[in-house]
Amino acid sequence: MKCPYCEENQSKVTDSRDTENGIRRRRECLSCGRRFTTHELVRLPALLVEKRDGRRQEFDRQKLLTGVNMACTRRPIPGRDVDRLIDDIETELQRLGSGMVQSRDLGLMVLERLRPLDEVAYMRYASVYYDFQNAADFEERARTLREGQPEPLLSVAAISSRRTRQRRATRQSGSANRPKA
Image 1 (cartoon, helix red, strand yellow):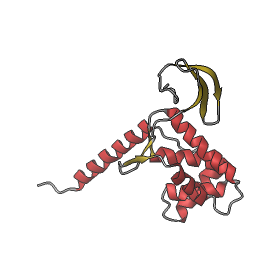
Image 2: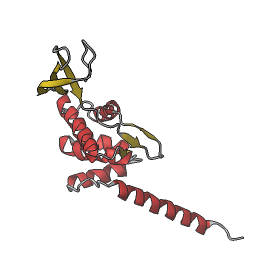
Image 3: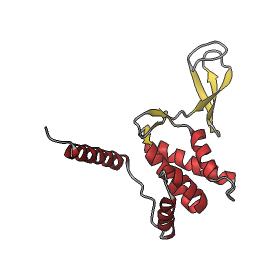
């Protein structure tokens, strides 16, 4: 660490303390003897979200918060519970450590946490996530909610293998319907 007074590179740490945002260190320059303080922050690697169409973009906490808040509109859910839900998801994503998450997995993580928090907010979020097209879609999701069936959390590998199977099936059915020359 370079001394801010004499610009020498040799210093010793006389005190270290954890702070809210990182570590505070009190240092003493070995050349001029003056003391100074440094602050160290932990910087986590950027997290990317892979969209269903293959595009990748940086994880945006505010975007996720906006989506959850829309689902929770006019529901008796304290703001701190929504913040805690988002914090929980962000922490889990960082803990996974892969640096990449599928948007599908992210949506399932939200649904898993919204379900015990508020059923109406869960249904609102699910209607967008699962792209409900009619009342039957709502009824089906409500039935699974009443029966207490767990949210179908899928791993990244399961999602990609499922997509591959779907693409193959689509190609095979498409080639079966083509007239032979």
